[in-house]
Length: 72
Image (tube, rainbow, N blue to C red):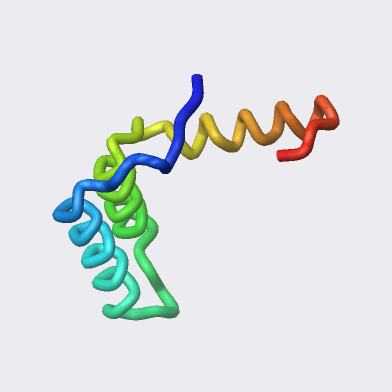
């Protein structure tokens, strides 16, 4: 599976992702609720029309490449 960030994001969803992330940190930057960050990430992934498991797939692919000796 090849996934890319080359696509143009949905500007409304991208803006919502930014708003959610800023709001999460603005409340108390020292104690950010991880679920708020996950909500922002989910919205960002949706903005780029990426699956919710995109980061898991990317990390797994990166790990597989590192084990094979290939550059990430």
